[in-house]
Image 1 (cartoon, rainbow, N blue to C red):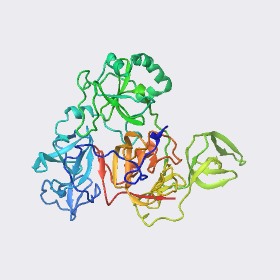
Image 2 (image 1 turned 135 degrees about the horizontal axis):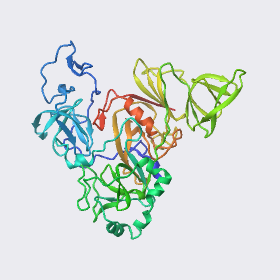
Image 3 (image 1 turned 90 degrees about the vertical axis):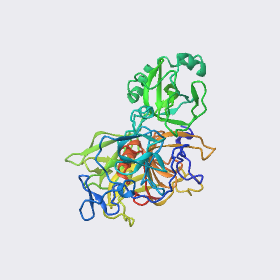
Image 4 (image 1 turned 60 degrees about the horizontal axis):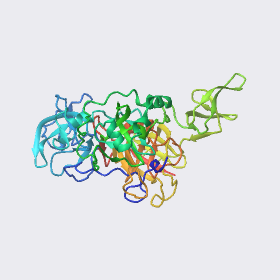
Amino acid sequence: MRKLLVFLGVGALFSGCVERRDPPGAASEVASASTVRALGSSQDGVTTSPSGEARTARGAAPAKEVLGTERDNLPFEPDGTRIASIAWRTWIYTDTGPKRTRYGYMRAGSVVDARGPALKNDGCAGGWYRINPRGFVCVGKGATLSVEDPVVVANSVRPVRGQGLPYLYALAAEVAPLRYFRLVSKTEMEKVEGKGVIARVTGWKQRMAAKGVLDILGEPGAPPDFLSTSEKITKAYGVPQHLHFAVHAGRAAPDSGFAIMRVFEHEGRLFGLTTELDIIALDRTRVVKPSVFQGTELGEGETLPVAFLESHYSQRFQANDAGQMHATGNLRHREPLKLTGKRRLGFFETRDGSYVPVEGLRIISPRDSYPSFAVGTRKWIDISIREQSLVAYVGKKPVYVTLVSTGRGGLGDPEKVHATARGTFMIHSKHVTATMDGSEDKSDSYNLLDVPFVQYFHKGYALHGTYWHDEFGKVRSHGCVNLSPIDAAWLFEWTDPLVPDGWHSVLNKDRGTVVFVRP
């Protein structure tokens, strides 16, 4: 692929991934950045029992809560009150005062449990509501108590967590799609795209079925009820806006990636509704077939070494009573193999009792020493640029091993080449998805919607899932650490701080999982 395959930096030219800046109006109340306690930790001597009941440090019931203070941030029993996001980012605050800071944000369409009574002040005329598991949201331009709001309905398809890619994805084809803002007729399509456009897409279903694309998209249905042939879609507050022509908002950038919430058939053509509520013709895209590559978890009693098959063909073997090896099956490219560390002739023994040839393996070996923070049950992530590997640890116990793609500048200076920053860092923010673009650098153009499972650990450097390439194990990025979709989903749910259900992001300064990047 073209320049779409890489990310540029924030700040310095070569410093990680560029997340799209906050759109206008995304944060109507400005709060200063500050250290935020980790979600789920105790605060001011108040903890939560396994049953969810609040207790003080001495075990007695806490003093009467004062709504609107950070002390009020305790989970509560839902009473049916719900609050929904109607903005691209609806900020969740630590308290309701003038010095409030941010815990994270919800995304348009998110609906969470809320608790009143509403607290009104100069910072929120519509009233503050507490949400689970903590924090306060202001009802107004960014949030509503009506879950039937048109913006909530239009954005009701929520990202899937923990399984791989959170949405369907597509990449712009040679001729990028137009961003239609309402359903269009055949006549309108031919007027703006050319008279042959409908004839060109005839037979799309058969072609897509032959390529296996329908297996990814599923059987398309009719357009959702909220789409209209006469009215443009009501978008969330703060969604980036474009110049509007008769029926569309211009052509997408050539190096665009799209996250698709809904797929439907209209006027004999297949369309997708993006997370920014643009309607795009999918015949102007290449639907992403997600990478099936994934690392491996290490259970109780399992440890390194782990090998990955680098060659595209090899076999698994068994030894008979005479010690002779005979093949029992084929191995997949990059298949993870848990080794015992024992070698027999030209074979390594695996933990399931089989053998694999020594040649063609990338072996992730046990460490011979550990950094000072590898103690107790502390989580940390070990990334090797030379090995293009990632190992997740709890103390000195490895629990997950995989291959990654770091900056294509290798071990070069990140300030001068596209390399990943080396050192000891901490995850400072997590986003279920984040849109990244090349606005910081005019030499590279890309606009990637909803990059999955983004975890920033140093300035603009992040761990994140990748839907535009499948070359994990090779340097590839402009500085970020690219993960396969399945690995990124697993790691996102494992690291701290946790992102609560219904939230799209958490911000953190002092209790995030350590990220150790070494040569």
